[in-house]
Length: 352
Image 1 (cartoon, rainbow, N blue to C red):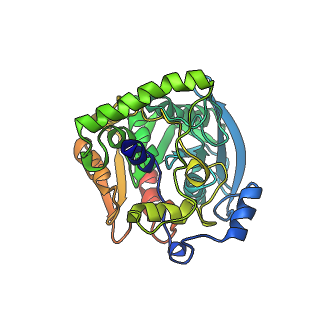
Image 2: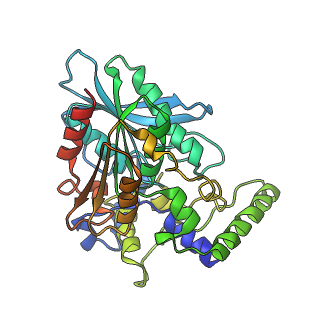
Image 3: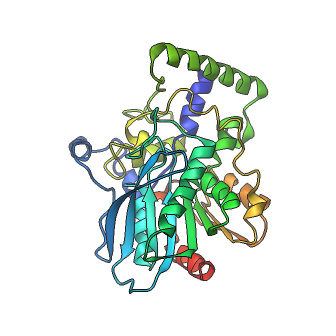
């Protein structure tokens, strides 16, 4: 039971902003309004247009996305970005905010819900896959490359939090991706297989996999996948680690709550971690080279070591940017902390 709880905490995908200090328990009235209607967790910019789109990955799963277009883009095809994350979030949250900000800076930007989550297809629900979620990025590149306003030779990707690992894996295998950037990176395969800071013992790993393996029979007997406990509690007890508090202050308050987000309103399938525990995502990270990699992490982020280790494993050209004073969740939606100017410069330089 302890290991299931640890895995439940590990697969939350993070958040942060000064609002968190004032809304730890959330506003019940605003939460009900947010849950009752479709909404975005950020204001729509008057400098972009947003279109709801769908496209399929090579497994036949229909993915739902929002395509952000600069209003002043002109008539010539321009560079484009595919963006997803955090792990357990939806396109109306951080990825949409990033896509809008990059569209304001002159890119076509696609924020999408991964397979099995949000408005995207796939059955059963609430599962992740080392392979399929990597493929989701390539499917987004497929879609972007067929748009008349996009230069298909100038496509990059951004992975946020848990989808940073998938974005790096996609860049390693899909040579159409010309540059990749990550923020608040998690390597979901590593943290699932080894725990935080690689402290899961072989005995703990074995026991967890035994529980997950037996769960498969339970799911078949029940005719449906078992769903684990909700990723975040209704209220904080006061004993949680600070990074869980940070998650809560985004996903469970009006600041970042969205009814389709597993981190706001649900839990992962009980057997979810199985493939992640057995398929290391960053095995071929060196093969992204000679295409560039930018890794951005908060100085105080509990996840900082993932970005640092990925940087050490990657080949040149590569860059690691540490944001002073920032925690993991600060890079979800804090516009005064997310280095959008850096991201703009990185992609404009490398998507020529």
